[in-house]
Image 1 (cartoon, helix red, strand yellow):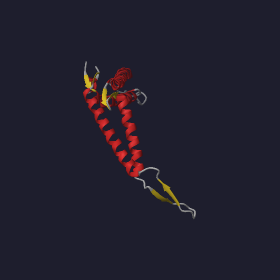
Image 2 (cartoon, rainbow, N blue to C red):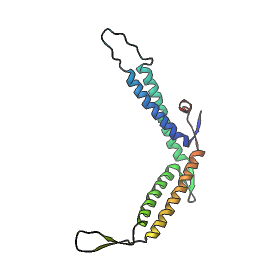
Image 3 (cartoon, rainbow, N blue to C red):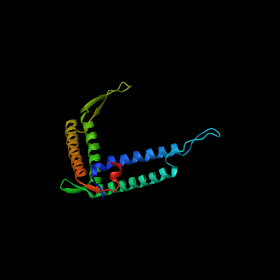
Length: 171
């Protein structure tokens, strides 16, 4: 059996997906032949059935790898905030941290008090009900946390291995 690091699995999955698309196109190109009446034509070297068999095998490999990746992302653990998280949970947390960091940083770019343009004679103001500097600081802190978490995920992806027998066919 071939072992690959988890970080290699996504590019491998993409390569298999590309191969599936190539086989689909190849099958389409050999499925028909056009020729004039009474004219001889050259048959393609591979038949539709041969390409279909290779396509089915490749699709099976793809499905197997997708399942292995999903299982590995649940089984592989990282330590975060004194707790063990699966890569799946850590990826979701990193995404949430980045989303919140971006929102807080956008609050941090606002003014404490801003004049609002209006089309009437009334002068209006918009008051921030928070301290923009503190929001900016919190946002940057969350962004650094998300970066550290992403680094931990990347390290786990390099250290965790999966067994994928068909890997050598595509690498």
